[in-house]
Length: 310
Image 1 (cartoon, rainbow, N blue to C red):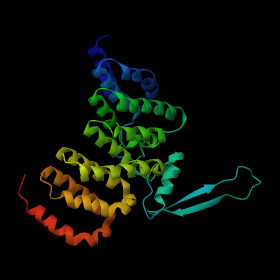
Image 2: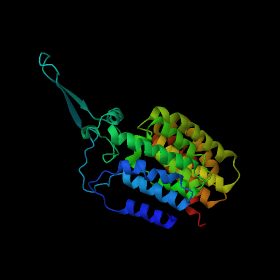
Image 3: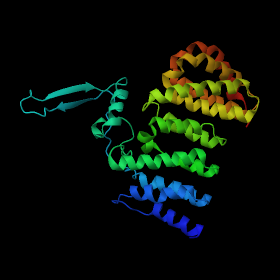
């Protein structure tokens, strides 16, 4: 068949409204095979179609089943044997500190009562559907890190949103995402770090150690790289890492500020803009830890605001 006909078929399959129909098996057995097609156009369309067939459409008016902070929930434990004591209720308050623990429960329990984030429309992670989706996600990530065409690699990471998070939080997929951080195309590296940022609360044991290494790597790039374009990229990625790391960056606040102060007067306005963005994320995460640095920060910020350069 011609490339045009296959591309059109894949595009039609992805765009057509199949509400009420389950097409996961079709994606896993038929569409995935086109990820290895010699034609880049077909491979790229196969990536987009696979993502569309797996992800259910977001319901704009769907009720929010997430448990808000400062609320509470109850779990009733009923005995399997009638001779056992009466059922018991366990009540727990939802706070900022316990929300993560509840989220861990949500990763293994499909009940909407325990959903604590925006992944109410997430893909299933158990049963036949979960296993099928896991296979397709693995194939997509393999394409995202190995396809020779950068447009196709970028399409893979652009097609993955919050609904893929439960699957991406698996250790083998996290490893692939960190491999993507070494891609030659900056846009792909930025998309990968944004996906990783969404996984910090899902699987911190695998995400945070590697994220800490990347944080240090970006800081050294800012310090020792003389190329303005590379500095700009490092500053952008640093801002994403700071936003995703939370308390992880506390021991590195002084080192981060040192690099920010050194680069806020960079000759390149684009570098200065990216560094200021990183400073904004650091201020949001570190908060009062920066109060001691205000005498050094404020004059530079005022000078930057007065700068009329484009």
